[in-house]
Image: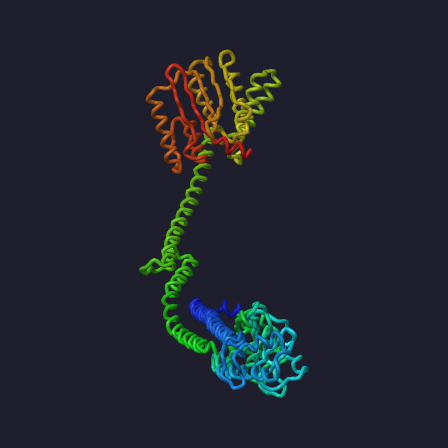
Length: 612
């Protein structure tokens, strides 16, 4: 929470600097981690490649070495070599074959000759051979030098093994009374007569040649190569005290040799381990080296990364404030402009600098917004002013319409008196006429209603028509054809009666009542059309054109004060309808000489119908 509060208090410039430094540090740390990770993997893979090549090469050399030793004994074992010795006679070269077939037929002298043959082989070929043993199928043993008891022979790893037709290499062991570990190589001997296995020649060799091969080979400062037999016994190790010991009983017991290439940890230090297995011996030639020695360049890379990060932070500390100021300066100017706009100064504008970045586009948008806001404020002001003017004009038009009537309070009170007298005198027509006329003037005196239902408007219109029927009893006709589904439509009060009154004045009266007035309604899109038609004499063309021009003038200048026209009823109704519903509504008139006149009133229908 404290960290969040601190970030809230920082300015935009400080946040930009902090963000740049944080991003740079994260990027360098990630780069350092990634380089360390991949460098370590590459180092490990390089070590594995080198170690595999080295260990496989060593195994191959050892296999060749043992196979060459075995091949060099084949001629001696077969008895095809001749030896110069005072003890040997012609044909004694096959003594080894004879001894293996039947040892009882070979006396002490010939056994001595066999030992001489074996010792000469050692002296001429491989000085690292410490001793040689001939072993027959019946477990008779002839030693090249010295003597070995049966107990000692029984401890030899090769003595209990059955004869094999292939070369066998046995791991190191200590001979009785010797401090030097030896390797045993068991070479099969075949009878030259029937090529069947007849015995084995066992060579006990010192580790001299193996040591020459791998003893001087180092990997890193402390890395080394050693060998372990298939049963886990150390065959060769630079530390001679570990020879012939099970690996699990030594300081190397932590090694896990399940995978040929692995990274293992011991006492807090990581080691790279790689080995390959000899096809001949089954031994594992293992390369072991600390990871640090193979990744000497890794520390240099880490130090370089730290130096680069420090230099980058210094560069950011110098360059970012300058860059942040260039970025934030237009934003500060925009902020000041917004503060002025907030106080109501609609004339303020943000400075525009060349370019197309987001801040400059934001400044342009702000200026457009300020201009639009200024326009909207002026528009709203003008609309409010016009609304007030329209309300005043509407009231003025309504008052003017009512002023055309006789003072309603005095008149309908007088009509009530006339109605009472007519009732007492028994004159029903006068009584009905006074009643309807009083109803009409009571209706017109209610100034609180601007808009009423079409049903109410038609009811008061019917009262007026009843009066006209009483006046022209015989010939006058009137009819209201309006479907019930249109009766809920809303209409301005006193919109139809003045038009019907005009029809009576100009169509019915000149013909002494011999005329008709029809009222009908029909939908037209979203509007409702109400028509008042008469069959009078019609209107002169010039008078009709003049009246239509007056109506059009009122439509185009509805907000202005209403002028005084002779045909006060039509113009007054049209003016009020245009003011209340808009320029698309109002009165339209059509007249046909000698045929009659049709006045159409257009009002909204769908909107009004939904409200009702």
